[in-house]
Length: 306
View 1 (cartoon, one colour):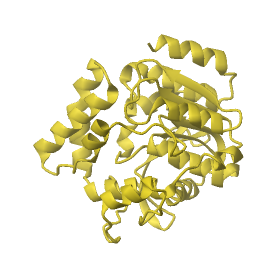
View 2 (cartoon, rainbow, N blue to C red):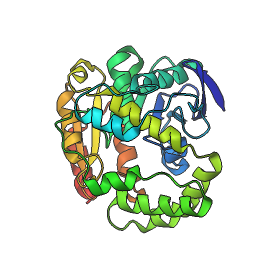
View 3 (spheres, rainbow, N blue to C red):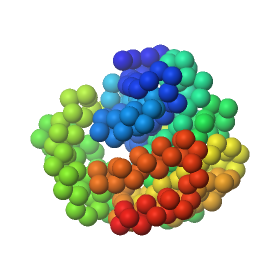
């Protein structure tokens, strides 16, 4: 269904008991709400949560910004690396306002906010700007935006910055190759589902220009490291030890920047949530949201994931 949020149309999926504690799932760069698969959502619903996921602006079935002025992406990247202002039609704060608008539209006063990758950045912005609206924060494979952190290798950057193919067969092949790379290693259960995932993504609609605008929003938003010291929501940081896109140091930096944050570093986890790790991650999110004492159990789970 669509809701009006922050002045634009946002596609939303809302499941679970109306009176259950709300978990808001925010997906990453270029990813649609189905990036949180139903098989990932269902255990949270079964645990008593009302689970809300949505397409971010400029992707999937949410409103696009094709009318926005175009700017040379390579030049904007250079400007970001030089510490100069980056031109972008919107920022991560605007996207955080979208997510807050989704909660408003659904009558939700407070939520446990969970974000992956760019979604983690959006969730961090929500925690900084709207502390009264978060019951907890879970930041997964994300970063503070600290420019001193290790950056992706040239090979990673070249792979992910290639223009997205729009033809059906080419898109399916790129989807498969990208996730093989991001997952790092062999995950047969996920590889068996890649074709179906790609087909569903394609059927909901592609917006290659939107992905570029989302990336510019990340560049234009700069570092949150200093502002994260203001976060009051109980925070869990989950990061893969072999993440090829967002360096593991970014997870440690996120946890170190948020007062009282707990850190869960996961063996064999790249920049993805493989099916074999779902139960561990879902359990961590659930226990964090319900306020259990986390530190020792999470460390044990992280070791078992390896």
